[in-house]
Length: 344
Picture 1 (cartoon, rainbow, N blue to C red):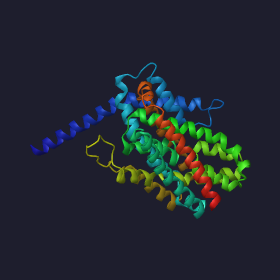
Picture 2: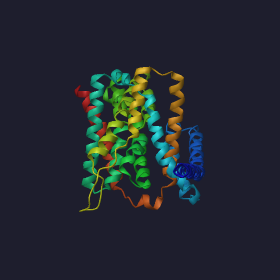
Picture 3: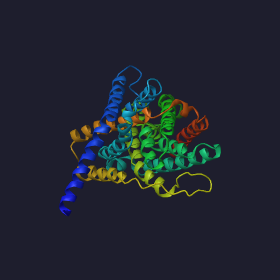
Picture 4: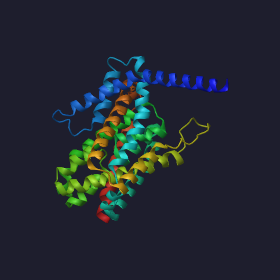
């Protein structure tokens, strides 16, 4: 009798899982379709320098606020925003090695660490002074200090902000990162920066990886190679930053209410583990290339899901304070990185 009850429970659980998967499939397919269109649009002239993640969240927002999103897609959209996002971040670990940090050098690592930490804290302070929403401020701080849209998405695993906050933060880092992408090559000659110094400046301060690649290779191969390595080193700060946010920053709450800390993002341990594996084993380039494609596509699906959940009406209600916070944060990291490079 007892054994029969256990078997019955397992059977019911299996049916429930199958039902949940079937329930999520339409929404997951919709996110995949939006991601696919984003990749297609990226082939158009003038669009290639933007990551597919940014295009996908914009497309998702367009769909949500024009034709709307059927309720049948809700479960799959939520699955894409959370489960697929975490899997993508774990796989991102296979693109990084501790050896890349060594290539940046002690000076480069020091510049990056100081710039990342100082910018994050500066953004939190400015957002607080301006009275910007604290959750949105934290997302902007993560995106500006580390690696743009993917950092915003990862940080939201502990911030647990509204989808409109995520979209707003992604818009901030996209706009200000794009301004930097076009402005930096023009400033390189004016500032008299050597190729490696210029690459370090761009890699330690421009938001998206694609923007860094565009800004550095526009100057030359040496600047491009070093800028890319510097940027990847900066991406490695994503894991400790998300852990620090969960461990030390209390969750924003109403005045007088308890403000518990966010749960630790255990999936980040998977990211760190794969970085370690890639550093020790030396995985084949073909495997790393394939996982890079998968990771980027899953991140694009996650951002598409966030776009599909974002309302323009609620987005406008956020006002200009967060945007000004993002602008000041971008100016801060650009200025501080340049000063640190000059001093060292």
